[in-house]
Length: 424
Image (cartoon, rainbow, N blue to C red; front, side, top):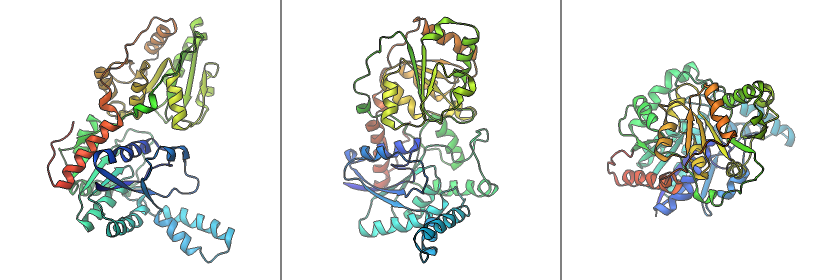
């Protein structure tokens, strides 16, 4: 069996939506002839963690966790101090040192220690190819440097766009990053054996930014085993809507909350049948919108609990971010929603990646973001029992096993020195 050095800064138990893609690839790659050797980040104190994810990791998987350079230096410099003081001083030093490593991103301090560990692993055990998942983009630079020093080919996987789109509220880039990162991106992509990304739109925009026209498309997906056996209907006449995901500026339940407030103001008695369960973000927006009578905000929950909430739903709510990603994104939860075989209420533009997938698979209805009146009429139809959606079809291509087979094909070609026609 071939070995792949699998560079994934975000890896269990780190709680992040990007973690699940890496976890799935690592779990399924051995079935495709590749044994992953994971190079992950050693989380900092106070990091958001989901320890339950460790139980999902395939038995026998080797994971090497590497701290940031700032953490290593702080431990060394504070090592002569007594116990409790040593920890406090080291923490303060690590924070200040990390703030100095910012190019290409906040994980820049991971580059040197990760390269050193990777080279030691290659000398001791060897590997046949290198895979790197970004963000953070530091992982791409690690892959390139390890490749340069070992002669092994590397594959880059863009979960997002490196170059800021310019219209996302949570995108932050320093002047130095804006100056240096475009050249770093093109350098990393130029020498890669292959480049992968997650949506058709990103195939084009990332290809433009990195200077390549041969990108492979490998979407996110779902684990069929997670969705075996649906929850029985409660039979209480209520309509349960579930949302599992983050809330960021321009990305959340604001349209749904506005609809509930509108129906309340208009005195629609059907609203008494509505229950909304939202998980994945800190509670508070429902209270601000005055809709807590109908909405339960559960905060961040483990993935297993999120899946259980999906299965118990009568309707699954799917928004997309505003700006560029309104049309370019394919949220990972879309595929899990499809696997639930529950109707999906997608608040997405007509010319979007989500609308394209739902057009292929069925299983959902769509309305435009910001169209509160249109969404209100759609919701009333569901509350009155007038709406129906056929279950989705032909979703096996989005199983995690199927998406991993596509990645294995890319790795095979890279290791063999073959050119593979772009997977689209």
